[in-house]
Length: 295
Image (cartoon, rainbow, N blue to C red; front, side):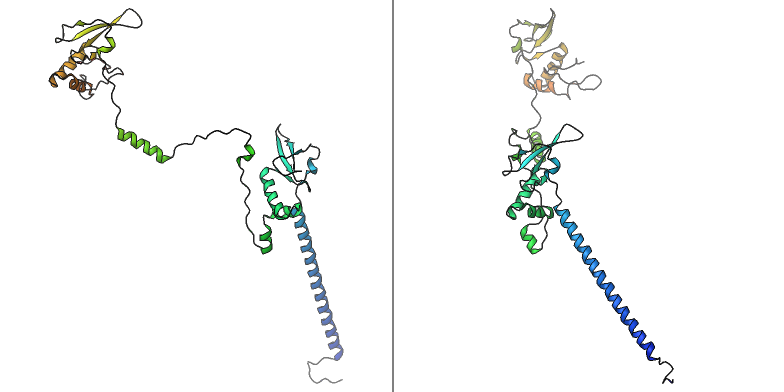
């Protein structure tokens, strides 16, 4: 049998090739459809698993052996159980819904669930979906998502406990104002110098070793039989503890031309009251010099 060209093939071979191509296309189409079906089944299984997980909320069946009590702070038929801890003597309060017996850990979760329950007209299953997803009904219809914040606890739960005013620390601005006001007020006034009015009930005697008008008293101590000698100026009746203090005051009195008040100001200045080594001698609480002065 003769052929027109070298590339031409007999018709039997052409038929076989066509049939093989058709079978190949049919098998590929079948495999594609099978893959689509398997994907659909997997997606349906995943969606079913999702719905199961969203509705898989703990219920009161686990705690049925513990007696339930009505939860007074929530609507009727809501109950509460006090579940004992395994490691201590403490108990945890758990709340349970009336229809589906859903269990909630705290009062804040119950309040959030009640909000969702109002949105779905009392259907606890639908409310649980919204509670889990954190979406409202309007957001579900529009497809928008939003973050839901949990209700912040208030003092209503603790209203049975008496409250007390909280002592807050002062603001830094107020503290600065107080400091400035203290600085502007200046240094506190020195205590007045003691006089002979405190010892007027004790008779005085003239002191001959000092100028005329100076007096001396023997003051008995509160404990014991000993007495202390005190010296008194003639005009202002200033009281001095030792003879050396009187001599120093007389020096200041000469500088102030006999004015006892001006002399006392000079006498009280620490810069003017110096010992031999140059150190100043502070005064004690009574206004006296704390140590004897060497003049």
